[in-house]
View 1 (tube, rainbow, N blue to C red):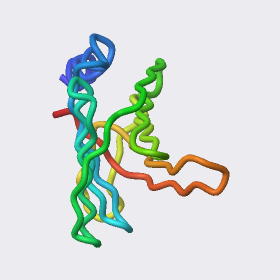
View 2 (cartoon, rainbow, N blue to C red):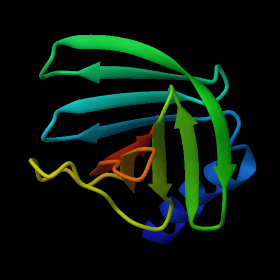
View 3 (spheres, rainbow, N blue to C red):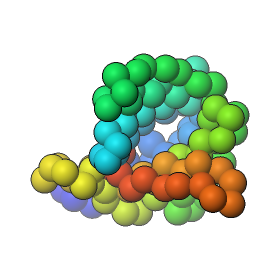
Length: 117
């Protein structure tokens, strides 16, 4: 059964990366991202600041191991397709590991979990 679930998840990535929805959670700071690649938008919910916003997806690149989505002026979301994720605060196991990066030499990174929706 685990094999079939993994096969389904991987086929969702492989079949059409341009038409998928992914939700990612990060902690410290508490950020939730809802990615809709078909609409080419990322909805951002920053729970600490209490701010919700949205940004257009600039580019989507896919390799065998990663899905890389750039959005806004300098944000990059890297989803590791072959690695389970977690948000660092709960026991929930996510489908994938997500890394949220700020572009540039001195950029910061957050590690979290992402699920297909």
